[in-house]
Image (tube, rainbow, N blue to C red):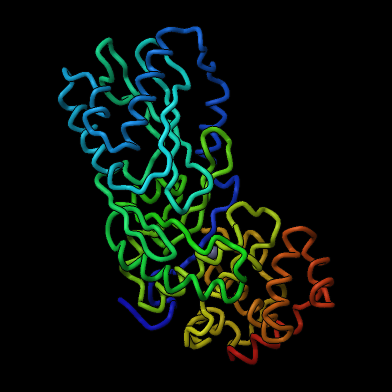
Amino acid sequence: MESDAPGPSRVRTRRAVLRAGALTAAAGLLAGCRADPAPTATDPATGAVKALLEARSAAVLAKDKPAFLAAVDPAEPGFLARQEELFAVLAALPLASWRETVESFDGTLARVRTAHSYAGFDTAEVVRTAYLRVGPSGLTGDGGDGHADDPQIWSRGPVTAVRGESCLVVGAGPLDQVAAGLDRAAPAVTAVVGRDWARKAVALVPVDGEHARALAGDRDLAEIAALAAAPQNADGSPPPARILVSPEAWPRLSALGRRVVLTHELTHIAVDAASDTTTPLWLVEGFADYVGYLDSGAADRAAAAELAREVKAGKLPSALPGHDAFAGSSPRLSQSYQEAWLACRMIAETHGRDKLVALYRAARTRPEQDALRDVLGTADIVPAWRSYLRAHLS
Ligand SMILES: [Zn+2]
């Protein structure tokens, strides 16, 4: 069911940002990596696997299928077929880099670090852990039980890539729609935050809900339209950010909902929200919704329906929503987003949009109260915000 504005009758268009450290599963893997012995240059078996994977990595970038498959033991037809599929997927992606390096090798099982980046988009690599079985005649299989690879966008079947003017969208499903939406969103984001960001982003559209959950670090995306995340790299290096589109929620969004969601997420990307652990969440989410709803034509009472219901009943919030108010389990999650959105819009309307942007930048480097006082001249915006809510929602 669709409506013209994000509201209670439809999927919650939660537009989350997954901040640094949120991916406990990935953090665990990182800890695991460190406990493993490092490969030694003097170990001839490890050296042979290393050479095999180097040749295979070069074959991916050269799109040389015979060279890629030459690493696979021909006596393993099932694995060979899966590797042919993997090659077809990788060959269709605009990879700037692809590296498989041996992290450890026990004589039969290699723990491998895979790194990749997309040409024209990434300045950092995505680094994940994978496992390969190795026999005397080459690669014989995946890790198997207890040695699952970290999830990738291609882990669950064929994916393709669509390149827009401002985006690369990789996955399965409505790639063209997402690309068109991001291309439309990019100038809207730049109009508010300025040109000092990459002005492009990579979005992933997973195959299904289970795949989305795996890519989101075991976070359920069924009720979340999309999120901006920079899942931790397996080697601890700085990861590139991605917009993850929920394949379950996306089809249930209206055209307006999709526009708001993509602009919201792209705003998170533009201000690097995924690596920001300082800025208060009301400002992070409220700012992204401020840009998302800007010039959208959405009516306040529809876009903030849950909060409007409370305000009409005479229930005004007494404080800006805190960190916990944005947890998936928060009973007033929708209201928290709406409160944050309208707080940011009030700041922009009262003090000017530039002040809102300046406040966002200031809050990243100093305590919230200091940032408010320094930029707006007052640390207490709550009374003005309550009046604003009453004026717009009751
Ligand atoms: Zn968000």
